[in-house]
Image 1 (cartoon, rainbow, N blue to C red):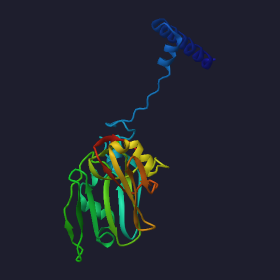
Image 2: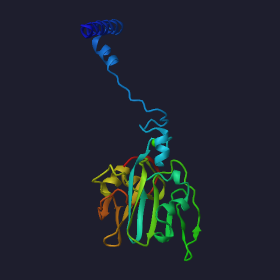
Image 3: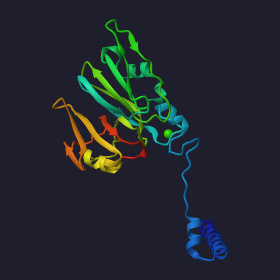
Image 4: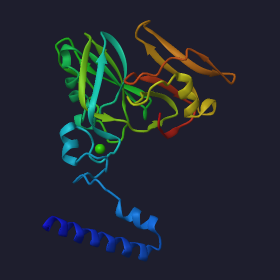
Amino acid sequence: MVVKRLFTLSGVFLILLFALLCTRDGNIASAASNIYVRVTVVPDDIDHDGYSNDEEIAAGSNPADPDSTPGITQLNLYTGVNFISLRADVLSMRNAVTLLESLGGSQVIPRVLIFDPGSQSFIEAGYNEAGEFYGENYAFTAGQGNLGLVIYSKEDTVVVFSSVYSPAWNLKQGINLVGIPNTVTGLTASNLLDRIGGEVVVNSMSGYNGETGRFETMAYYNGQLVGVDFRIVPGEGHFIFMKNEVLGFRP
Ligand SMILES: [Ca+2]
C-alpha cells in the first residue's frame, strides 16, 4: 500500500514537471531533451579526457593534454637498428637518461638518436664501453609530439609503457620522423602522402623494412607517385620529407 502510494506520488510529480517544461518551452521534443541529458563527471580531470589527474600522474600521462592518456604502449625492439615513433608520453620521464634506463639501460641499449624536428638534427645519447652515460641529456617538453627515435639494441626486447600519446602531427619543412596511433590501420605511404596534401606540400616518405634491411620510399616524380607503396605500421617510425610546413595533421 505504501509502495503504491509512493509510486502514485512520484507519477504525479513527473506529470507536473513534464507539463511545466512543455509550457515553458512550447513543445514536447524540447522538454524531453531537457529531461534525458546525462553527464558523466570525472572529478579533477582538467583536460576532460575521462581520466582523473591522479590516474594520469600515476600512469605517466599528461593531465593537461587530452591527447595523452593512461594505456598500454608496447615497444618491440629488434637486435640492431630500430626506427621508432614512441607512442608513450615521455614528458613524465623528463629526459634522455631516464628514457634510456626505461629501455633497459647499458645492458640492452648502447646508443639512441633522438630526432629534433626543430633543429632538423639528431641528438645522440648512450653508454660507453665502461657503461657510463655519454652525449646530451636531452630534456623533453610538453606537446612535443611523438618522439622520433633511432634505437640501437643489443638484443630483441619488448618494453611496455603505461601511457599512450596520440597528438596531431606538426610537420616541419624538411625531415620529420613520425608514427601513427594503434587505432589507425590499413594506411599505406601513398594514402598518407595524398592526405597530408599531396605534391604541393610533401616530397616523399621512407620507411625501414626490418626484413630486408633496406629503406623503402614513395615519392612524387613529375606529378606521379613512384616507388614502393609500403604499409604504415603503428609503432614504426617513418621519415617524411616536407616541402612546406603542415601543422595539426591527424593521420
Ligand atoms: Ca590527459
